[in-house]
Image (cartoon, rainbow, N blue to C red):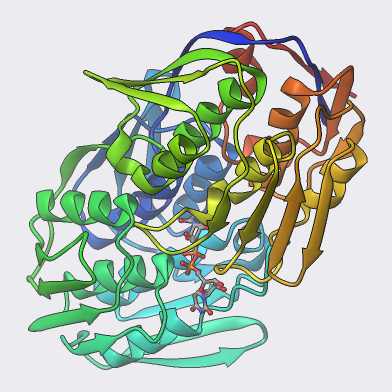
Length: 421
Ligand code: EPZ
């Protein structure tokens, strides 16, 4: 397994290109199941999760061709000749559940393995099943699989989510495009990835309005056609790399970065003393030479502070001036980076869903272990500012969501390299 070695090397200066959003791409790719015509996705990130989704779709009978060194995906589903999403693929990536809605909408049947939990929580799929049942799907759980069928076609309905769920919103949105009549979804997720999916579905001929707000209306159509869609920039990659000059000092320009993708995150950064400048098609982040001030964070659904940036922010706050409180309200176990940061000299006290961080002058490099995607990159950020060498193991977690992290940070002067064992 690969490791990444980082040596604290002072301020960073340079430019980092931001890729297309992993979490948008993982919802856009299953949309191919809704149409028999080509769906062309450009600005695709080149990540292991995208390859896993491609593998899953091919197992269902889709054609997925990657062009332009993987930056363009051409997906085509003339027929779905297998309706079973196998456990050995689904267990690798929860987003596999996003084939359920489109398959039920197009074919009236689907068998999808229960995704199981993961490091950050149980992450059930009850909301996915509830909203699809409201549209007329009938489910049975058997031998670890969700067996779904529809008598005839899905039918439009009014459904209010009891809690906000990104994935369940995406499943419902896709399914409703081919349902008979009108569907109104309330208390939906408002993330930019939802907006991006809706805009792509509209290009395919869907009738959707309200995306980006907490209520989306979909008027079902008979069928969808092909489309070409450029994937929105990855706001989590953007936020992650914005923190590199914050923790190490310096000035970095994030190419393709837009503040409105992560405005609450930017507000918090400015509150802690960071300068952020929006240029024509990039964001410049500069940390003046004083320490960032400690701040309090609560993770919430968009437009609140993103849970996917909580671990990275914690790394930064470990060397802030004063104390910080981070409250994780989305997932029940998303502080596994804390013990690893403590190994580097951080002062963190975790009580349930709340972590109290007391800033220290400097972290010390150490061998640490990645436990999940965002925890892994928070350890790399910590290593950028730590004294000495930090060795991050199990970086396969990292490769799920970050393309060539060592190249992007190395281009700004970081001493970072990947070591294959
Ligand atoms: C998406 O996961 C993202 N993944 C996650 O990013 C992100 O952290 C999460 O949204 C929240 O923003 C993708 O888009 C592929 P949820 P998702 O349904 O859809 C509970 C990353 O690092 N819940 O909004 O699975 C759930 O357990 C990943 O890129 C139910 O109880 O998240 C969680 O506590 C990590 N029942 C909360 O809701 C359900 O049926 C939010 O989950 C569904 C969810």
